[in-house]
Image 1 (tube, helix red, strand yellow):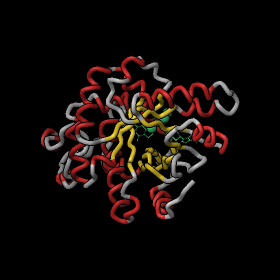
Image 2 (cartoon, protein in one colour):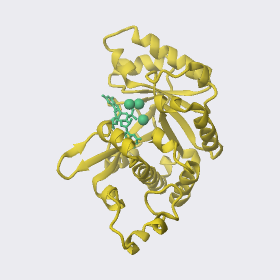
Image 3 (cartoon, rainbow, N blue to C red):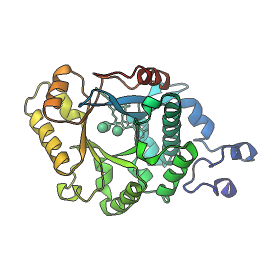
Image 4 (spheres, rainbow, N blue to C red):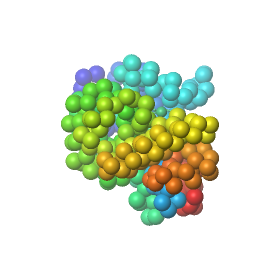
Length: 281
Ligand code: C2E
Ligand code: CA
Ligand code: CA
Ligand code: CA
């Protein structure tokens, strides 16, 4: 078992998948084959509110359990975090998303500026040699770091700010983009925000949802947009569902939108079709 993992900086899957077949032990419970058969990624477009074009896709993991059917990531990600299985699952997700991006770049030249956004769990960030593992995946999939954006929740970031800042700086130095997810829900110390080398704030969808029946919620949205711009960050509104929300977000100068108004998370095939049609909202 020790030899099996030795090539791999952070554990989980062997860097060389052929190592699986030469292994005499049974595969670990969260094995490569289990992940490949039961997990998949959907992709949801993130749209520029300036030109209405697809700017990025966010990879969102899905678990199709053989008995229980589709299980939401809201249920199984916290479980995977508690058990530590998030490490191997998380690296599979990053690799799969990078493979998808590379495939798009190869098939459609117009897709090249599209960024792939991948969620990283705070638990993953605390592993050893995170930077090396990310570098390895970029190298193996042939993805240029500037087209990868890693998204970390505000609460995850703030748990261990000082250690995290150093890691984020290393990732920035590689050319990777960084985004803070669920912004506004994690009680960050605002004073710390400008120390974080992040490119983007993502306004939590609860604020956007509330704007429909609570005019005052627009004040919060506007404040986050201003805050992001004052810190030289771009801002994404998540959970955009209505044309009214879109119009108001544009008026407030929000840079990007994501939500059912544009598209739900799509299978790889459907995301590919959408990308091919080069839509404009
Ligand atoms: P998140 O990162 O905040 O992702 C956005 C969630 O909002 C997704 O739910 C997406 O399907 C949903 N959503 C997008 N637009 C709309 C909209 O207009 N209306 C509504 N009502 N919902 C919208 P999903 O895919 O169920 O993921 C839930 C959460 O699970 C994610 O929240 C993220 O925290 C976690 N998650 C998903 N995939 C991954 C992953 O690959 N790695 C990690 N670490 N966490 C993941
Ligand atoms: Ca996210
Ligand atoms: Ca979010
Ligand atoms: Ca969320």
